[in-house]
Amino acid sequence: YVAKGRSIGVAGYDPLDDVNTIERLALLGDLRRALSNDELYLVYQPKISLTDGALGSVEALLRWKHPERGLVPPDAFIPLAENTGLIGHLTRHVLDLALAQSRAWMDAGTPLRIAVNTSARNLHDEEFDRTVRGLLTRHGVEPSMLLLEVTESALMADPVRARQLLQRLAAQGIAISIDDFGAGYTSIKQLRSLPITELKVDQSFVQAMEQDEGEELIVRSVIELGRNLGLTTVAEGVETPQALVKLASFGCDVAQGYVLARPMTAPDLDHWRSQWRGLAALISA
Ligand code: C2E
Ligand code: MG
Ligand code: MG
Ligand code: MG
Image (cartoon, rainbow, N blue to C red; front, side):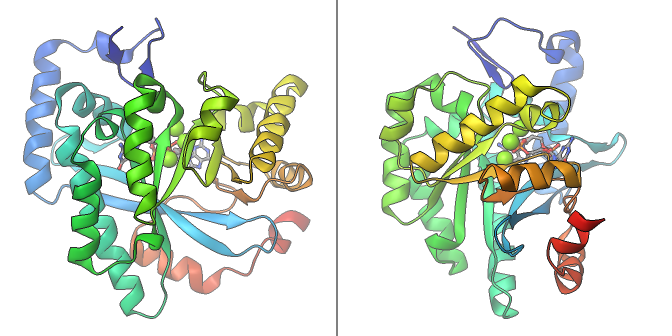
């Protein structure tokens, strides 16, 4: 099968099909330029413990400030990079930015673990673990300060190869998280065979849970599965205090979402951190 955008092996609608080839080529050319022009930057979204309200880590999310188009969302250009091979450079660039920030937080006496998103192609690159190790060394960052988020669909594109690479990364002390879990077809057996420490429930379920008991059952089941496998469970895309309370009652370990904090630039995050007083105020509101 052909991998298209972020849905792999699924015959579905892909918005990229509607964009004409010239337009795509133009954007791709711009993206190549953006890589060397400081047009790409990272924002950081807190991942908060539902047990004690602590800021455990942040997820780095890529932003592109295009000189003419303005802010281009990652869903509009990451699939493009994935389909052309530019994703190798892009992920390397993101890791470089994230690890420089990690180093800066460490030097400021406020260390913080960072999660970085990866793509299917990165998992098929035999050199990827060496690339990551090289960047960690260059920035003087401990592997335990880095977590790599791998989507369930990326894993499924080539499970055997992906598992081998993840094992090499995990052996270095880098934590691995499965992102967007529940939307794909990973078996429990496959999940058990992977060197992962964290499971992120796909935000579509987290958001639908409030109106639909069936979706709520999915969220509960994924959290229970994660717990039974000894993994840290994370709910992403949490938008209301009610959902936070529900997730905590299901035994979910960590939450991420607009109700807690939006993705922020590093200076804004530093400010947010100095103001953050835990979950109590949010939940009683
Ligand atoms: P993701 O890794 O699943 O990230 C979660 C997305 O949900 C982010 O969108 C985040 O801004 C958004 N989000 C967080 N909280 C909420 C909420 O409460 N409600 C709603 N509606 N959305 C929320 P974003 O930043 O647009 O990124 C979209 C996707 O693009 C990411 O999904 C990830 O798959 C990809 N992506 C972003 N940055 C990178 C990157 O550096 N490398 C790679 N390979 N992919 C990236
Ligand atoms: Mg992610
Ligand atoms: Mg996700
Ligand atoms: Mg996602």
